[in-house]
Image 1 (spheres, rainbow, N blue to C red):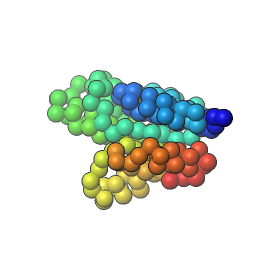
Image 2: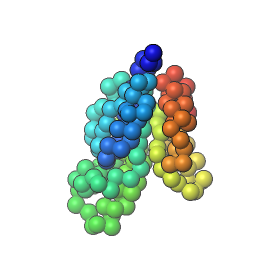
Image 3: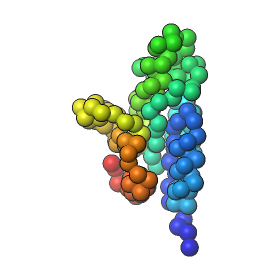
Length: 153
């Protein structure tokens, strides 16, 4: 017998790796919808999702879809600035969503080495948990179970 889908999560990523992997391995328990940009995430965030799952790096995203530090479309930028914005786009998208009153708990998939930076992000953009790539699928599933049950991070 398969378990019923209990919750929907909004996956914000520039590719499809997270969405496809989670749907394939956890799709009997959870539903995953995808947003490829800040504007798509904002449009979908109020559609019944119980949490946000964000990739950090959006290097495949065209510059006209990247948001800057103020949550505005980045527009024409020098390549070095485009690379900087793309490298932290998940954080910038979450910041823009928080400014627009999206309070869904979030998991940010990022390998950050600085404990102070992680603590700052989790405090500033909470409810948020930074999840390293070394975290296995079983632990991610437990985090999703907690979010689905309404237990904040």
